[in-house]
Image (cartoon, rainbow, N blue to C red; front, side, top):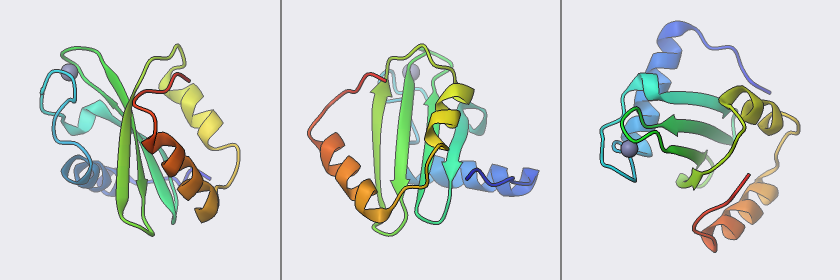
Length: 114
Ligand SMILES: [Zn+2]
């Protein structure tokens, strides 16, 4: 479920994700700022964050797994916009086992196409 976040809270979270997951664009090295992030999902187990680079227009989806403190990010090449991705991501509650499974799966791949 997507929690509603108040403005301050949201800004703090975005800063946290920039500090923790990606300070710079993977492709061109442009520094991210809070406006370049979209929090797609955020619950007790995991967060999914969409990073879009204003300079080279590349998009990355990052997942942050809270129980194991691991983040993973991958370039995306998709026609879905951020709202659509959010809808898919919010469809089902995810268990820790599933997250680990996805994590192991993603680790083996450099790029996924949604
Ligand atoms: Zn870039």
